Amino acid sequence: MTSSAAVAGEPEVVSAVVSTAGRSRRTVWPFVLGSALLAWTITLFVTVYDRYSDFRYARFDLGNMVQAVSNTADGRILENTNVAGEQVSRLASHVDPILVVFAPLWMVWSSPAALAFVQIVAVGVGAVPVFWLTRRHSGSARTGALVGLAYLAYPWIGWAGVDAFHPVALSIPLFLFAIWFLDSDRLLPFAVCAALAALTGELMGALVAALGIWYALGRGRTKPGAVIAASGAAWTLFSVYVVVPAFAGKPSAYYGIFEHVGGSPLGVLRTAVTSPQKILATVTGSEDLLYAFLLGAPVAGAFLLAPGLAAVALPQVAVNLLAIPGGNTDPHEHYVNAILPFLFAAIAMGVGRLRAPRRDQAAGLVLGLSLAATAAVGPWPATVLGASRWDPLGIPNDEHIRALEGAIERVPDDAPVSATNRLGSRLSGRRYFYSVPVLGRAEWVVLESADTWIPRDVGGYGDPALLEAFHRRMERSRAWEKVFEQDGVLVFRKVRP
Picture 1: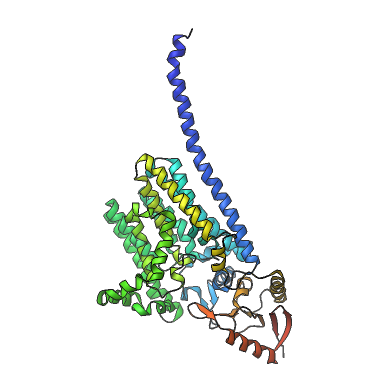
Picture 2: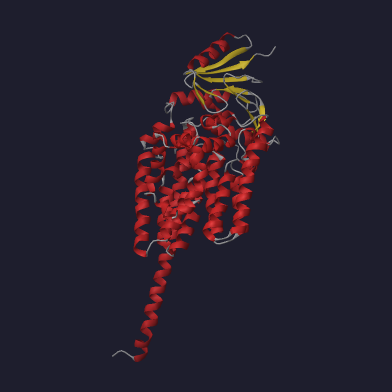
């Protein structure tokens, strides 16, 4: 016979069991996401280290960052050797002074792999504010975890992690944390994150400005939004019109990729007013439409659920679409990085606006499509499409890798050196590093005859004839002696008088 006390206590027991189960479910989803983040980080670092060991990173762009950080650690702040062989500040091309903070790391771990590892960790950590934002707006840890997992599965997030090292990749987590703080009206930590994001590139201020406009219009916070917008715009204008010309002695070399639509920022605005049809034709080419599809399809365009926040990415989208056809509209490249945080913040908030049954359905759809896309295009080693895009020279065989390693071992650590591009990521951690065919103060030359890519002020291209002519000149010169040759890799040492 059941006692009245037992009967009376049953609701409390049931309530306690349900409460415990609810807490358990809320705890397990962050654990699932955290485990996935750890696995993602380890897998990408192994992938990157494998590529680094196989010489599939080059001077452009990993070596450029390595030289700037290495020189900063030696007291020469952001010093680089440019393609003309001049010692200049990194700020003459890109205003990304956040590189300075890597100098202490370089003193402890003097390897290009150190920078690559930090980038992978930073990009992966962006899953945390994505989870928080989704959970806040949906009220569900499960929905938050699904969107966080979709972030990790999204192929262009993976490529942002493994694409050599670019300071702008750090803007992904910084902007996501900035949005998290702004979403809860915590303006001081927002300002810190936004300021750090701005230090990753000269154009990041334009995105901070757009975020301020979103805050003013979307949240009704007119005054702080206006201050944020004005501060962001001021940073980009100061960087483009003051910092770069001051260090370069001329306007930015990157104006050239917008020459067809007016060149400078003011020229592009003038074209937009006087010839809007030219702007429209430029941003609706087949390559541009494919770019938009590759960005939107893996998430089913779910960022359109919060169109105002997604629109914050438009300054960077416009830059990419208006540039001459090439890397800017290739989502494998780092030019897409500053777009990604706003797309996923918009997904996080947009999914939260749906009714309860549809929230998880939408999040599950985004996750499923992202997994399918990343299985197809990488950046995992087994994905053929990603590998073919990443390795224009092909993966070196073991004999060739041994030849490259043997050549590098011949060169003293701090000696001025000139080398072909692929060798650059390994040899550029020194004050003077030149790109073949420039010799400058070089005392050593390391030449890979299969690597014909020659850099220019912006970008570069294969020039076999130029490389062959340089090779013949080195062979004939009495000022240089050949000290190593194996599998098409050669080392020359300057002859001392």
